[in-house]
Image 1 (cartoon, rainbow, N blue to C red):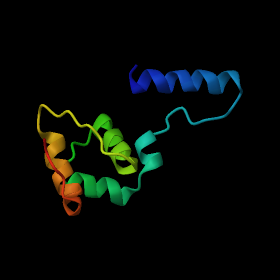
Image 2 (image 1 turned 90 degrees about the vertical axis):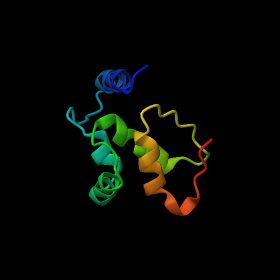
Image 3 (image 1 turned 30 degrees about the vertical axis):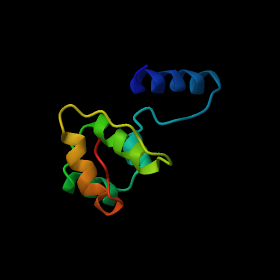
Image 4 (image 1 turned 120 degrees about the horizontal axis):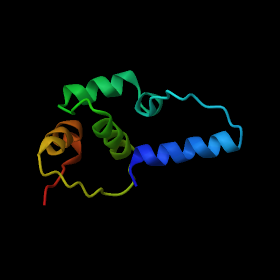
Amino acid sequence: MTRQILFQQWQSYFDKAKIPYKNDLARVEYVSSADERLRWETNMLPSDDLCRENAVMLKRFTRYPLVIDPSGQALEFLYREYQEKNIVQT
């Protein structure tokens, strides 16, 4: 299930429960600061919504994530963003 479909389902539940919400809510802007997004851009994260949503999830993980990155874009970002954590690529 894609994130967009999941978000649409949530909106449907909100509508049924008469819970007000912003239809144009920018999820990434809601859960991250402008400073974080600027740092991500500086650290070579592409500026599309999917990449930013992934960055938010990585920021909040409590376990080691499995990142599958055939293009290598995420790897470059991760090395720059988390350089002090001694990332290991396997």
